Image 1 (cartoon, rainbow, N blue to C red):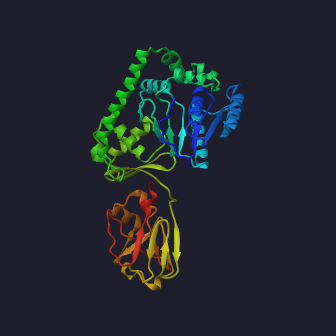
Image 2: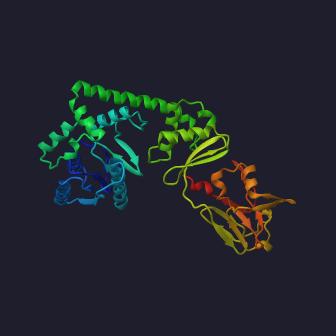
Image 3: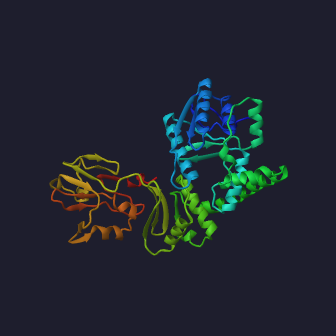
Length: 413
């Protein structure tokens, strides 16, 4: 068995290993290419053999002089066991990936898994990034490699037998309470060679059609990773769903989204309100800003407060200013110091010429996106009066001589 991958001598590589035949065959093969292997094992404590399997795998790693990392899962997961177990193991993989600054994570999915996954996808009628399984993908900022997708389960067993590779069979794989096991035992294992070839052909064709659809939709996403609402408002459900997933892929959103959430996203495209925010997981946001939809990840807090006691420079994560040579061009005088540069507070008012305006109203008139309003800098003098707010306008060019650079957009991935 071969692995089509370019290994580097100085890089570390993780492998998810259960001590089953698939992962042990992959581990045995991987060691022919590199010894910089870290074996990652999760013991779910669901079967009486699990402790013995962990022990045997550890002994194998000691014999091969490779690193072994393991974790014990809680004996009980609340809710969907398979989903919870998946989240648990990938969180563990991510920790080990970062610990060793790994290049890739190898997973021993094989051709039978491709067929099982495809049949499950069709049965559930869910949107997918890929029909079957991808040889290369990314999850939680980890590069995932599945080099055995061209090999069948029979190929794996033959390899283990011919190379005396130790392994243990998971007895839970023969239970039909999970859909995947049911499909494997009642459908996949009974396929003839011709039927098997036909299913794999269907996987290929469906992926080709998916690629064609994406090529049609991708031009609707601009270089800033946003979508003009008028271009998508009339898309059918399949097209709308796909373009939403495409842009979520662009920002590497690692989770699936429900039909209910897709419906909510579609609703805000028809809503007359100029600014609407939907909160996803892990600080990811979907934002309607007037005529555009943006999909972003916020990396900052919602407020800040800085002080400068005299004309000088100030560099913050949110803005940079240099008033060393004065800022009279911004109506800031020496008598105004010390200055406070802060974010918006409820009730803020700003004097323009001879009248006062509410800062909130000013932001609305400027059509400032909602995601920027809580972070936009406001300069207050020693008396507590707002004396300067940088002008906001899309593609605005600041022509003042004094330096004031706002960096808020850099906090949106």
